[in-house]
Length: 143
Image (cartoon, rainbow, N blue to C red; front, top):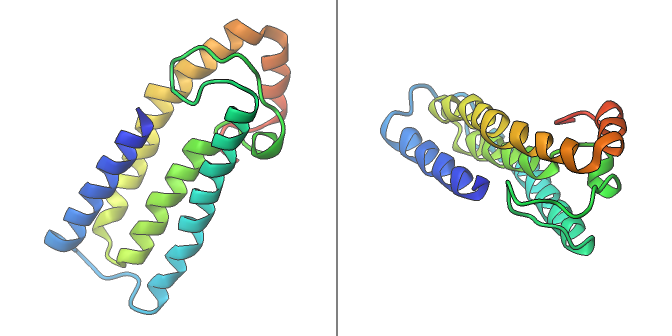
């Protein structure tokens, strides 16, 4: 599940920062800029979660969706929860200030893309057909 990957990524980032900090790229207090993507990521996750619950469909990856949500945060991103998670880890990396946590960011995004998004989008296309295709053509995967 993605939250497990998020927590694992964050734990590895913290370990890298403290044990192999490599190079300090964001000194204090400039590193506080990381609060912005962190807050936006949390807000995106909460908004997406609320939309899924409001429409009575699943939040869990690989479970069959009962609704195709195209409003709210889903109007701007087909994957606002994953975008939110990526923003959270980018925000934490900025807050830490060292270069080593950034090693995790592309790996996390690649895992989400290959393991979760591709499978979910295949299921959505099978379930919602032309509605999904029209939505996919109108709304980008990330932003």
